[in-house]
Length: 233
Image 1 (cartoon, one colour):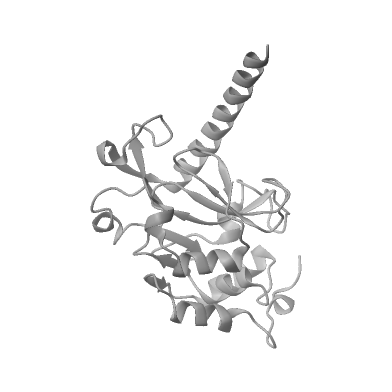
Image 2: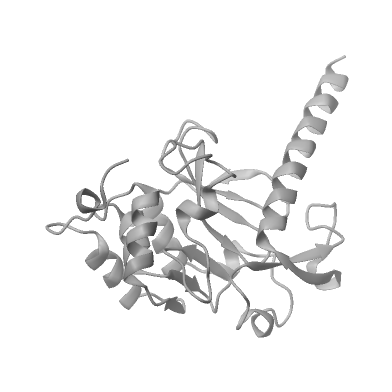
C-alpha cells in the first residue's frame, strides 16, 4: 500500500481541470461536501493519486450527483451518498483494499445501471468505462475513459442516453432520493417489450440491486450460450 502522502499530488493535481468542467456543465451538477478525514481514508484505501481524475474526485468531493441525483458518481462519501469507491468495490470486485479488480465500480444511477472502469475483466479496452444496462443486463462499452465519462455526465443529452429508462415525471421521484437506494421495476426492465411507464416500481437498497443484477446477468448470459449451442446442433 502506497502512503497517503505519496498519493497526494501537490504540484499537478487533476481537480482544477475537473472543477472547470463542473463550472461549465450543461446538466445540473451537485458536488457533495467533502470531509477531509474521510477523504484521506478514501484516497488511501483506493490507492489512487490526486494526479488522476478519479483520485481527484475521491479526494475533493463527497460524491457528485448529476441531473438531480439520477446519476451518482462516487467520491469519498457524504450524507446523501454514503459510499466511497474503495468501500463500494470491496467484496464485489476486490477482497482487500489495494487489490487489482477485473473492473472498478465508479458510479450508478436511479434505475439500477452501474458504471465501471474496465481493468481487464470486461474487454480488451483497458481503462475505458462500461455500463451495465438495466434493460439488457449486459456490460456495454462507452468508448470513453473516466475523464470522458465525467464530461458525458456533465454535458451530454442524458434523456437520449436513457431513452426508455425514464418514466413520466421521473424527476419528481428522485430529487431527494437516498444515494444508497434505487428503483426496481415489475415487469423487469430486461424482460421483452417492457414499457417503463406501465411498470410498478419500488425502492430497494443498491447493494441488493447490484447483487441481483450481476447474478441475473450471468444467468442470462449462460442461457444465451446454451441456446446458441442448441441452434448449432
